[in-house]
Amino acid sequence: MPETRQAPLPGWVFGRRLAAGERIEIHRHDQPQLVYPAEGLLAVTTSRGTWIAPPHRAVWIPAHADHRHQSCGNTDMRALLFDPATAAGQRAEPAVIAVSGLLRELILALTSAAQRPGAARCRLEQATLDQLLESPEQPLHLPEPRDDRLRAVAALLRAEPADSSTLAELGQQVGASERTLSRLFHAHLAMSFRQWRTQLRVHHALTLLADGHSVAYTAVACGWANPSSFVDAFSRIVGQTPGRYSDDLAAAGTLARDFGSKGTHRRHGGARPDPSRLR
Image 1 (tube, helix red, strand yellow):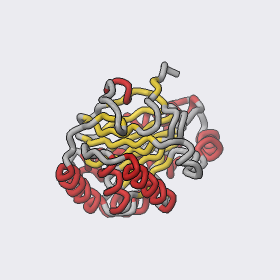
Image 2 (cartoon, rainbow, N blue to C red):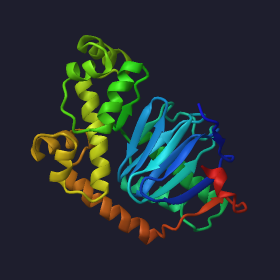
Image 3 (tube, rainbow, N blue to C red):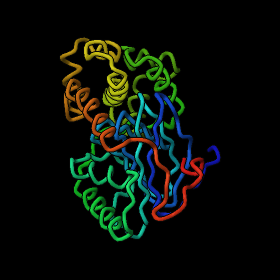
Image 4 (tube, rainbow, N blue to C red):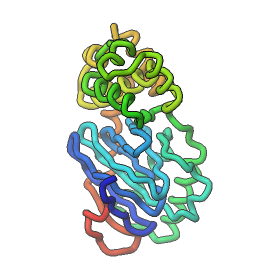
């Protein structure tokens, strides 16, 4: 595992603009963190897999979890660190969280450049934590294989998400039988090969749509036989159609800019920190 950076003490909030494909390398915090793309798309990866946050979604990261960020398209990343005592009772594992209109306003307010008295900030933070407890988790987690044979299959499909090879055909390439691979998917990832590949394709589709590609192009590029089957699978996992998702991307960008989305790095009531420490 590469050396990781520690984040500052609780109370840090920041916004940072990430260019398309930009990464914040592996690091950890002693505090739980909420990461939200006010604009764009953000992937958070740990040793257990990748959680991807499109518009109106955020990623909860427990304290001490090594993780890295990567933007998909130009992204306005907002992040909050909470006092572990205040955040007691929150989720113990990473999760993609649905972001309601109220929760979005709270996150944007806390990560804006506006200065607020400490008591006011505490009230906003508590309201944010209350909203998180009520927010449902979203099935946007792609588990990371640890078995070498599964890793080899995953590498093939990540390189070409539209690959329609059967599990038996992929097994021939990696030196494992279909039966063995099927058993490993269920035992190690708690899902079938078909479910894992669909999840991978939807993750790829989220990125392509964020880059401005059409629904029809995305369907073909991700391996679906026709746009209709793509829309069905995408809607089932993401909770909205690809067209609505694309519209939400545009609307989220407009709203974030209305709030003033220039990156800020600051501590509540403190001096401006070194941005390199906020990775």
